[in-house]
Image (cartoon, rainbow, N blue to C red):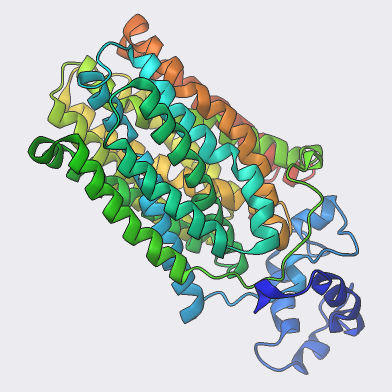
Length: 477
């Protein structure tokens, strides 16, 4: 199996790879030599890849950072791009993301429930720290999980993470005090989510290159499917069975999802020994730095909105049922966005798709959300449209990061990027929770809309850097 290969595998492949002695090596594609190659050969794949690459002489990563002797670029591997095993892996990742990010996208419902029941004595901003710590650990611990995945593969990470996650949900059913919820949901669930989500997303890069945008979009649809399912389920189940049994039922559902994911997910690239958990040299690449800043600003908006949208709805005079419905509707729109962006990115380019969807989301925030006020019809129009845009963006973010590195370094790059993103998500719900009663709904929307504008600007600069600061509207990137 690839995940049990020796630590010298990458070196041996690099030193003895037949491509070094092939006529296509380091030369423009020779059509006569290409005709001699059998269909589906590595050399035909390489020629096809280079024809689609805006920089034929190298990958985007190699153009700025020549590979070390012990590392392989994407061109040194072939990728299945489909088949039963590859799509089984995608299904497993889909189940994991449904049970993790799907529940996180419904965390605003937890916050409003705690505010009305167990934690009524605390402010919205104070309660928001529980969800903020959960999201922070989910993203920040990816900086450790990414290199562990690169070295050891997914099996133990998914197994241990799944057990801790299910136990944390069961324990949540017994929580009555602030510190109980912080330990069970904030820390326990957040830490286990880091192992589960980082592994589920990173493994996609082992099976797909050309179709990675589409495959990642399918995986991220799991977040929307889980968000719809959990948000529609929570309200009636809480009313009929109470908090404790609702959490036990959630643990059962999530446990089945994690088991399916553990069975289906497999890695295929050789393990890679990386230099450390954090590779700060990533930030020497302007493309990576600007893309990470853009992702951080968007995630600040997304998780602030998901965490506080039910509370915002109640503050605008809408019913509690509306606060549950709005999360389900937003996630439904997000599902379409996640699927659409993957398809579109494979045709227009990943950074181009990110810029288009960010522009759309910014427009919806100021044209649909800001003037909606207490008009419920306008609020229901805003939710699926913003969900569509945000779903597109969140599924494109890790794919854009993956475009800037080698395939076997993706886990580390993803973890390094999201360690900074995590810092932004730590403060979004507490800050938003304190601002909402002070500046009102319109100020709340304008505040988060300004972060969307900064995110768009950062990705425009990142795309410019990918083109060596020579702007072109038509380049696929």
